[in-house]
Structure formats: C-alpha cells, structure tokens
Image 1 (cartoon, one colour):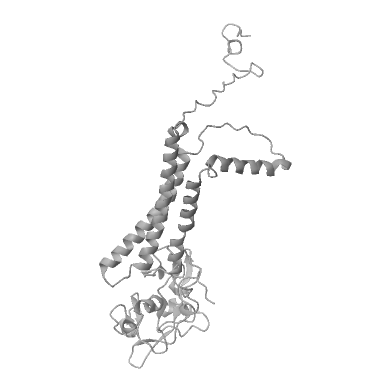
Image 2 (cartoon, one colour):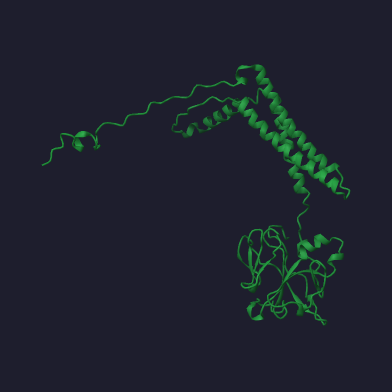
Length: 341
C-alpha cells in the first residue's frame, strides 16, 4: 500500500476535500471617498449652474418659436432661395428645441442633483408597505432633483416641454386628412389608353413582348391639374407572360389580354414604388422592404411585410390595337394602414 504522508496529494493539501476549511471572505472595501463638485461648495457656482440650465431650456423655447416662424411666416415664392431658407430655419429650430432640453437636463443632473454614491441593501418587500415604499422613493427623487427649491429651472423646463412637441404636431397635421375613399378612384376608366411613363406614348399590344415590363400611366395624366397626386395613385406596371403561366381567379379570366397583365406599382406595405421584375421567376420586388409579389398568382404576397396583393387593373385592346383599361381598379391602391372607409 502506498504511503501519502510525505507529500502525498491528500496529506499535502493539493486535493481539496469536503469540510477542509472555509473560503476566505473578501473584505468589503466600502464606498470611495466622495469628491464634492464646485457647485456643492460654492453658492455662486451653484447659481451659475442653475442659470446655465435655465438658459438651455430657454434655447429650446427659442428653437420651437423659430420653427413656427419658418413654418407659418416664411412664404414660399417659387424660388429655391426661399425654400432653402425655410428648410434651414425649420431644421435649426427643431434641432435647438430638442438639443436645449436634452443638454439642459444632463447639465442639471451632473451639476446640481446629488451625486453621492449609495449602497442599498436588498430586503424582502412586504406587501403592506409597498405603497409607502413607492411613495418614499418618488419623494426622494423629487427632493434630489431640487425642482421644488429651484423655480427658475422648473418654470423654464415646463415652458420648453410644453412647446417642444408642437412642431411635430404641426408637421403631422400638415400631412392632411386621411385619404378616405380617394384611393378607390384614379384616372383609370373604361377605354382610357395605357401610355408609357413619362412621355405618354400609347402602347399597342404588339409592343409588349414576353418578358418585357413597361411603366405605365393613364392617357392625359401629363395634362392633369394635379399631375403628381394623380400619378401617385394611377401608375401601373405592365408585363407579358405566356398565358399558360397565369392563374386567374374566377371572374378575372378576362382582366388581361393574351398574357398581358397590369398591376398597381404602389406597394401595399407603405407605398414605395414596386419597380423590380424578375423575368425567370415572375416576381415583383419592392426595393424598400423587400416585399415580393408573384405575378403568376395575381401578385399574391410571397415574402415581406406587405399583407395585400397588388391591385390589378383590368385591361383589353381597342379596335386600333392599343391597350386600354376596362375600368378603374376594383380595390384601393397603396398602403394598407390607411383607413379605407
């Protein structure tokens, strides 16, 4: 039998066994010594920091007022200089409105709020004292901010926070009312010819070869009073496939012509223009968020965030061989998040 008494693993301590002493406890080093700030020991520095915070909040207020001045009082006169001036003041006003509040709060916290290090012991929370504990925590936070005894900071902060959201409200309001039924009606109508975008040249069925894709607008769009608004709703993609590859649903068998089909170019996700056509797979791709539509299945969504197929424009051919619309779209075009009534 081997003897481990002289340098053996069990006798030498190289192998730890159960009950062989307790691990040495680490000594608590305690909190580091607190270094007072200048505002903690000098009343003049404290007042100076208070004024600086208030000035930053006032800068925020001035930025908000500058935004409103540019938004309501700088009148656009169809010159690029005026447009640039308005955009400059709008941008600077918004920047200073947000920057003033943000920097002011940070400066307030770093110079005036208590910065003593605190060690809090964990303890079991008793249900009957939850409300008292929460109330005490809120009271301590309010007391630490010093907002009760610093009316200059309090009043300037309230003014800045009341004005700061107003530019965003004005911008959203300027987007106009919800579209309602306007997305249900476009310039497409019975016998309106399909024309090339942007020159407005009419398209014959013989011009559309298998695998080709045309960006299409309704005839007369270029002369419309609200050209851009109408184009945003009516622009269409025109493609031709082998008729055997199409799978029209019941009632839509005559919505195309000899394999030629037309679909809204406006993605049903957020309204980006669908402009990429993959000839081999017959997929349409929206470049914004990669929504993918299968042309052989009436532009059904097969990938991405879109939830509705692209609306199809019923088309046919007139006596002169030109492609024309049979009617308007049968469903609203554009994104799905708008109210459709």
